[in-house]
Length: 553
Image (cartoon, rainbow, N blue to C red; front, side, top):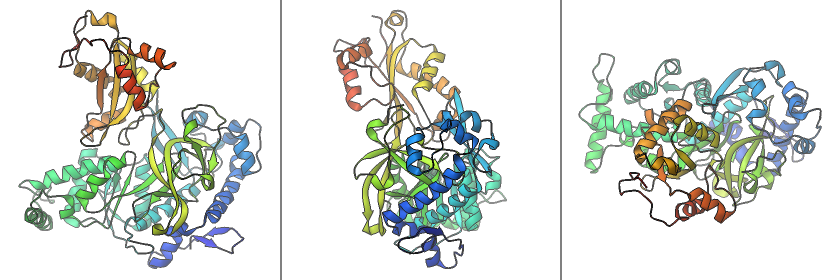
């Protein structure tokens, strides 16, 4: 098996077998980590971390962080190396200084950093990191189609809603294609030159002709694609056409059969009437907002994987779709307790995965393995431990649920990275008379979908001569959000969302809140108690009509 046990008191080796024609051996090799004891799991973590220390400590990037220190043990490393963020590595990584890295780089992967001011991050992937990515990708495909321990099947046709390279999702698709020889729809060679809408249409066309075994996507994108597919084939046509511009016979039969099934059951047609999925895998944030709807539409509950550009493919749910397990060979994991998450101090107490407590929430801190660049890196992702072991998963390991990004970042549907700095820049560029603001990620009461909610106080001097509605201010701010952050624009162009809502506050609300609470309200993601307090801290009549129009004082 992949985590092959030599004896009860010795370490584990990675098995290099690669024969998926032997289902049970393949399962043991790639999914066998679920059966490890916590001691066995930590033995793998420590061995790989010790190997990484020998590469990272003497490297240029390591010495830049260590400033002369040379930790020799993992405990020494955790004491001497400060918690880091991308800023600690940016001068080396953005310049692609491969001479400073612990091991040769095979490819660079890109992600969003902070719109406008710092648009992107670049992350180097070594051959060792890619090898771990491949193995854990195989585990995910097996688990996605599994009904219990060792009971799974592997198909060939994959409908993809993943973004292409240079993003991590593009790398994920290419690796899975190479390892399983999947038929991706649309093919990878076409996605680099096609816009999102064209990729979706082409993928649907191929899927309606050939059928689907797997659907791989972000939760928010999958929801949008499902709605588009249902709309396209619910009318008089088939939603696509063959090479001659006419629907193929296979496509027509598939759609007509689906329509009849939906009609017989007295409901609208859904994707599950068209396809019978083996596995449904989603990535990204806010997936809990979409899982129930996606299950209803496809007849199978999506399995969530957990990945980040800096950390790679780190975790997955199982066939029970209830909680995630971290792969033992993806990164070395530390966990920063919730009470320290808003702190920017470099020396904060962390624990390892064998010390997490049920019910507690943590920010994930990772150290790259296999020659990767990052050490004690704050990922900005929050997880809650929901138990230790689960008989239903045949596992004795800690289980987690993904919660969200850290409170200082607003991530909407996996597309945005909105921070205090980015909103400050939007407000500055807009030249709107905004005297105070805070912003929170909130969820629509009807759909459960996320949005950005800004609470705004206008300069009282401007109200004497300015009449402006909420919709005008929102439109004006959105111009600059889209200008600074192309991912924000994608919420409209790709997901057709209205991501921004604005609530006007009485003049003096922020000042009154600070006097009452003894400190300013958090600019990003204040608590609901604080927001309620801010909205009600002044009780005077607010000079608005019922339509939200600002009236002269």
